[in-house]
Image (cartoon, rainbow, N blue to C red; front, side):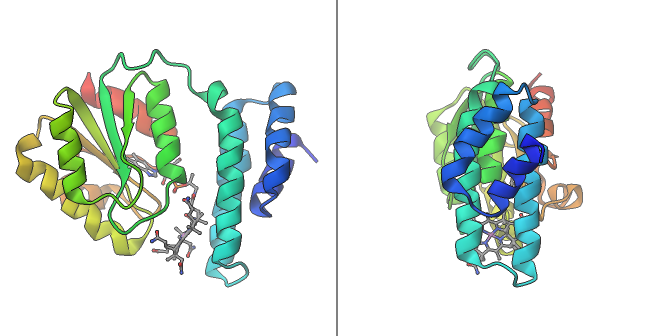
Length: 211
Ligand code: B12
């Protein structure tokens, strides 16, 4: 089995204790860090999601898969992040109110950081006003990213964009949104400045928006 396939299987089956060594072995074998992330871990999480939908796995299995992926990402982190920290300005990011999913948000934070931004991570279940408060505390911030993984928290994304606009930041701070149920149409509908489907394109888009 290839190293990347082994990593995918480990994430899918929640092998928390094995993942760090497996990722390290893949790095030592000169596997590409992005391929380890995308073909190994992200693909595995998508499979876990499909299995959950079919009632083949349940919340505890999702949780342990997420834990496994997080540990793996920590080993990968230095191999993914390479930019000169903070040169491009500040980027505030969070998962919206009611939503606890943070793997995708963390990956976007990592890639945006590696593109040269200083990332201020507000965590998960972030109320719209918290985004606004963070903007007030960081008047030099140029962009905000908000993540939502549940169809039921898409409304909170809308509220977040509205709160930021209402506080007077419309046009001054660029708002990016993302997460599995999000589309470009939804971004247009709620007045966000950009949507991207993955962390790599989020970093490229963030650079484009602030330049
Ligand atoms: C792991 C997981 C969990 C873990 C989360 C652990 C954690 N720390 O994150 C736990 C077990 C806690 C969990 C809980 C729940 N989950 Co869940 N979960 C998942 C799962 C399997 C993987 C998510 C993930 O990490 N994917 C990997 C990352 C890398 O991908 P991503 O998040 O999509 O992020 C990428 C892009 O979307 C984008 N992106 C993400 N954010 C942003 C932000 C910006 C600004 C930009 C530009 C881009 C961007 O870039 C990222 C990187 O490339 C998904 C299945 C799926 N296919 O998404 C279900 C899923 C999201 N969960 C689901 C459900 C139903 C739940 C629960 C309601 C289950 C329950 N009955 O309790 C709860 C809700 C808890 C809550 N209030 O949030 C459903 C949602 C269905 C829906 N349509 O709303 C899904 C789709 C599973 C399914 N197929 O049914 N879950």
